[in-house]
Image 1 (cartoon, rainbow, N blue to C red):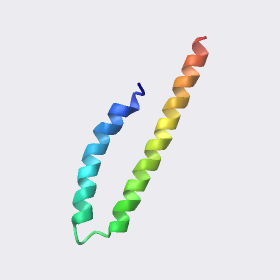
Image 2: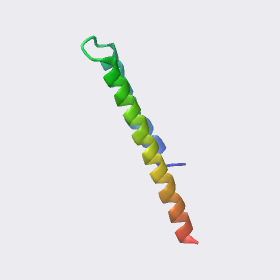
Image 3: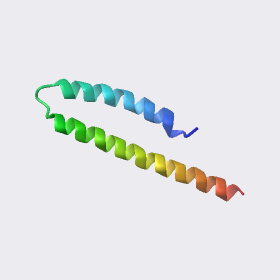
Image 4: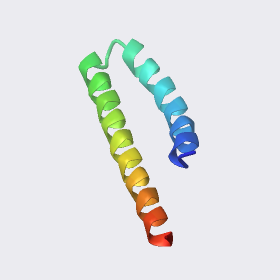
Length: 63
């Protein structure tokens, strides 16, 4: 299993709760919340790709 999966779940729970509070707040622009969510998803995908690449490189260097 990818070691980033439990970390992603652990980090995404409080971020989801904060995003929900910010989205329901009338003083916060909803577009800002969506931009934050998109940024978090993109950074998560980049981190996953880097982790996957590093694990493949480590397996290749063992052989």
